[in-house]
Length: 445
Image 1 (cartoon, rainbow, N blue to C red):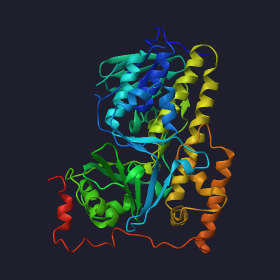
Image 2 (cartoon, helix red, strand yellow):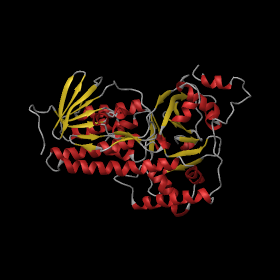
Image 3 (spheres, rainbow, N blue to C red):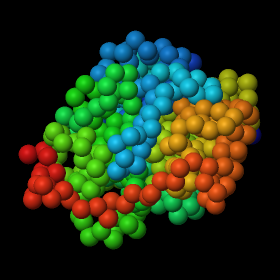
Image 4 (cartoon, one colour):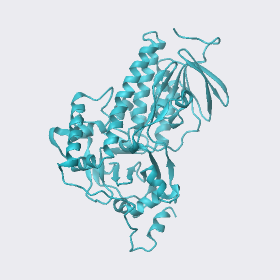
């Protein structure tokens, strides 16, 4: 039974947050003739991290009719990825076409321009977009009757979509935001944009690079013809023990990582880095009485496999479709929630598991080896490409289980050549330049 407040709701759906999840949901709902408002606390374009997209994302962009608009934006084609230890110049590289389920070519892009394109598309589709509007609290939330208080007054609707990102509006309101239990996922990211970073040649130019160490890992992602995004994700406790200011840890890491230091030999960029903490949490249940959680407002995970934007957009598309069915009388709210939760849990759980695997040295040894029986590497690559909706195919799942069995065996009986763990803390800043660390710390000057 859908409860209704005394006054009629202003909107069918109130969406908090105008990022990829919120904009996608607003676009789909508006195109179906639903009255929707998107409340965004900032003014677009705005800076955001997470510039590498999974192959599964591109077919969705095409389905939304945004391919031509997207192609007008500065971006870098992404055909695969690069992985390696921070001191090994012989990295492992792969293309998505060798996956067990071949993935679509995809892209890296500056999020400011991509997110603005999506939000503008939602406006053009008929969604009302209000920027610079802060949602202060949830007033009420039940099927058919929701209300939020903003700094411009109360706004009411029939359903609430929380796309507020790490603000987790609904999760905090309900007290359902909980950090992931795995100790491996308590991490902090230090990042910034640079120009003049050395890139791979040919079709590998757009490969996002992951360089690993005992303390964490670097990302190096070309996002347009000049700019490269570089970040260092570290174990939170290790980062605190360094005695280095948080806004200088990226420079500290680059100075001690031979491969990234080489890529940055002629780079220019800011003197200090930005910081994001609070990795890996969940706000279960992902849908409830009157609400659906989209993207990071539902769950946030370590960004090692660049899954965030894809999960947000795919989930938003699903949530919008289910609520359209509810509003059209074709589905009950309970069934809509059940279907949505199944999709989110099915797609996120396998990534959470793979991220846990990634932080074990045995996984890294096997994965960097680049080959294995029964095409297990092809299965892992397909999962990394985002072939997980509505849930991974059986051919992927059983190979992942086999890969994990190999990980266990490899710990005691080497199946591939052993690799020494690389440690940033054990590295010395190059002595050929007496002030080398100071030089790296001021590459923007």
